[in-house]
Length: 320
Ligand code: TXA
Ligand code: MG
Image (tube, rainbow, N blue to C red; front, side, top):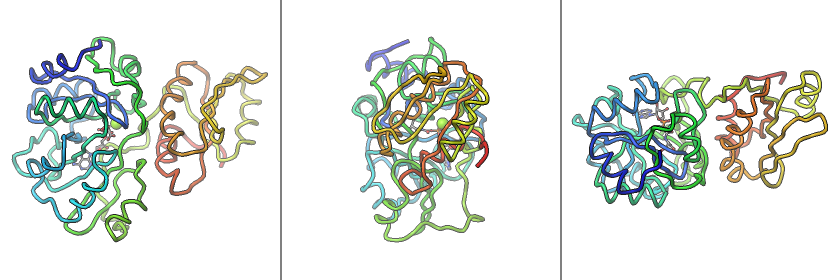
């Protein structure tokens, strides 16, 4: 159900959950200070209660309402990447809702770079907890239609058009003067390193995981198979019929149907363009109800890291 900005504000103030646009993916938002409203997010998403939510704020000036410690390093990052697809995990103030941070001692904060969500945050004077507006482990939505298809037509959706980044934010935890990458996103580790003036802590035994990141995340319903080489993908398609494919390396987004009636969506060989259309393409291929979605993996280079991460979680590996 589409709602206007004014209706969205009224619903959020009443403690309801509303799907909202951001530049990354649509979020399912609720007042971050209202535990009953936050519980609605967990229920609608069927998300386990031990998986904390990101709080969306309208500017870095609000960080100290939530974080116990906004260190110079965290401030530098906020200044460089906000508003934008970048989430900071910081030590929490004790008064921040235990529901929003799932009883962890940290809080995740982000200033989204989308005119509609920024206007909503400013006009409502609310901080909004918002996970991606999809059921747990399903594909994230990048349009209002995706939200309704995934969560049902009764969910109020503020339509802000298609998301232009297309995959979820980069998540970084900052403790004192050190930082760690918790989730890849379109702000790459090298960019963060340049701003921080030092590399991330790499010791994997010390890495606090972003709890939502298990391998089945971001999955279409159709079984998805990953291929490193296009020749292997095409061989599989010939042997198995009824497959659809996502290829990387066209110059633009392109849909074609080959002579053996395989439906193909070809994503750009520019990572930003490919990310923008990635979930849209997977949603479309999923709807074709084929026996399998065959996915060609991009190269394992820094600029493709976030896309490779999402695709690896969407599927399981066939051959190499
Ligand atoms: O781009 C995005 O980040 C989108 C838009 C809506 O802002 N949101 C999003 O939220 O992707 P979600 O809930 O689907 O993913 C957030 C991830 C989860 O893996 C969660 O476990 C992690 O962030 N997270 C949240 N709070 C955390 C915390 N305090 N410490 C560590 N990880 C945290
Ligand atoms: Mg999510």
